[in-house]
Image (cartoon, rainbow, N blue to C red; front, side, top):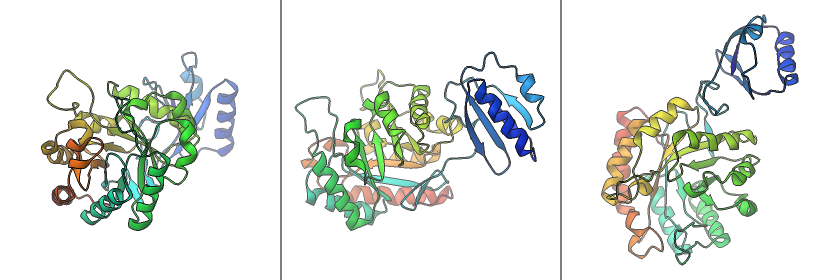
Length: 337
């Protein structure tokens, strides 16, 4: 339920409303915009009489929200949430490009790739230090050593770091990481989500392989409920009956998420398709759909990659892609970075 407060309402009346709602067992989420001030009521409001709330002098109107996600709901927070990552604004209409290898493999590999993607115009660097793999025999990442190499790449290039966490026990290693990524397999790891709710840094939350849009939003709600309101939603393709692509990219999810939630939306065409020739057309389509960020896999020598080499662009291919991305962004009146 959302309470729209009347403009110019007395502070004492608003405070009395807050106290009464809390006394009735509700938790509150408040939002103050340039034109409206709202109080969101979290809890079972089925027995709450709307008319008694609307009768108060400080209340303009009361609306019920049917969706189970409250804090990430655009109805509760009409204005876009804007997240700042070392000066890069996400959610303000500009376009951010995350690029880098699937896995951090060696110092030379991550530094060479980082230099290349920065020169091409990427605004953030990705790289997996911890790698969840379907096979227990596949490369699992360098873990703590991978984190160190990513930080070294940031020191040299200035690019903020985005990397994936596997479990809450690894949080101390992520203290200096700029954006913590929650992979598709962990989207409903609620223990991890609760722990990330206590972390004061942006979380890039990827949609689960077979998860609905509502389930993605509910996972974001877990992080919000813990006190962290810096969440970026990520569409990375879902599992369907189609076998010609690695996953099925749900481009409509990007636009729908922008309608349903105030959170920034990222999209990952690399994992969504798994096909190099599709990364460019899907990237451009995702920009048109309203994505605030793209996450694209780039490797200095994909043929030698220890994971997902077939979907990682070479630096030259990424440079060509960035040229087209810049032209599309310019056409749409959007800045990169």
